[in-house]
Amino acid sequence: MSNKTISSALISVFSKDGLEPIVKKLNDLNVTIYSTGGTEKFIKDLGINVVPVEDVTSYPSILGGRVKTLHPKVFGGILNRQNHEGDVAELAEFDIPQIDLVIVDLYPFEKTVASGASNQDIIEKIDIGGISLIRAAAKNYADVTCVSSVDDYAEFLELLESKNGETSEDDRKRFATKAFNVSSHYDTSIFNYFNQNHDEAALKISETKGKVLRYGENPHQKGFFFGDFDAMFTKLHGKELSYNNLLDVDAAVNLILEFKGEAPTFAILKHNNACGFAQRETVHQAYVDALAGDPVSAFGGILICNTEIDKVTAEEIHKLFCEVVIAPSFSQDALEILKGKKNRILLVLNDVELPKTTVRNCLNGVLVQERDAKTDGKDDLTTVTKVAPTPEQIDDLIFASKLCKHTKSNTIVLAKNKQLCASGTGQTSRVDALNQAIHKAKSFNFDLDRAVMASDAFFPFPDCVEIADKAGIKAVIQPGGSIKDELSINYCNENDVAMVFTGTRHFKH
Image (tube, rainbow, N blue to C red; front, top):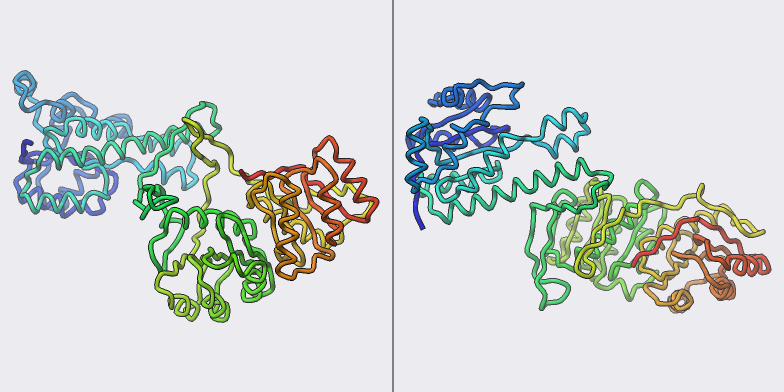
């Protein structure tokens, strides 16, 4: 592995944050610095000598800054092979300066898109010269060091200071790897902006923030999480989240967002499904009634609510062994109580928009679909029976439907007074799902008289509405669409059961 001493550097960056100590160290090491535009002025203002790239190329910055470094004298200085006799001779012949270090960051394309800027402003943030410099320097890592992100400044400065401007091939290759990570992510972002309607049937995913988990779904499996977890949550306390924790947290967040801005709502989840759920006037009562839905399954569960957790609620939660507690905020008293268990994970849910598409492995490829963003509301309901649901039943039906949408298929959800009585989850038969829910509700002493039932898909036969009716349920919400819908409607009409269709199926496989 060959060591190289940095004697010249090209610096051209959009953001100057953190650049000053690097420039000063390079100056201390007598490194010749080439630069452009705003970066050149920044370096001059530090009182450090800098050679304008224009002096090398004999061309000014043109086309409003679109072309500054795109020139053979710049790229020849980066791409030459220092141990290649022909390359060295051509550098001398064409008066091309050797460049050992390239420090470049890219125009903030993603931030510009996220800001809601105009298409023209976004297009202008597609970097051409910068991305080309990065690719050239990283390709030629045998001779050149490439620093391609502000995130790498600290590591590079430490390298300069510890080795006095000398780099090993391993050092340069490590920075080249970082550079190609930057360039590939950048191009992915641009492609996805142009392909928002998925007109091009291609999948580009790039996550630059990754974390090694303790293990995967089971201890013998490796596990990783790729994504900006810190953008979505502020972690206040507890151990590291596991692979299974993250899956449950994902399910919890997707569910509670259906109730954003509503009255205090509390959910307890286990294995991606809600085992307890309630909406009440206070967060304390919402938690107490959610726990009553299934205090057995709640052990070791994931807790989430849509409002601040206060002291009295925290005191109740503290009695339960639970893995994770998530809320928009915690009162200081609540936080101190919940921190009483050192491993309990406490997360503040930030206001972050979830991706519009979902991705999962399938066979030797992946399945991609739009997120199920449809939430059933009162305007979506069509009463198909002679008996119409009461306003109270409609509220419960909508409540149950939202919950049903986020429960594994086949599923049936039973609810009453905005409380989950029980659900049948992940069953191969809808009848089995209903029977499971009824059995579970009764085992926890729920009175199903005047309760409501939600189904994630239509009933092909009237057996479910009959079983539900005999259990005391008097209002049903389902998508409809079976060729035998009339059989279920007829049963409801004959037994004074109200039923509404939504027209939307919510399978969750």
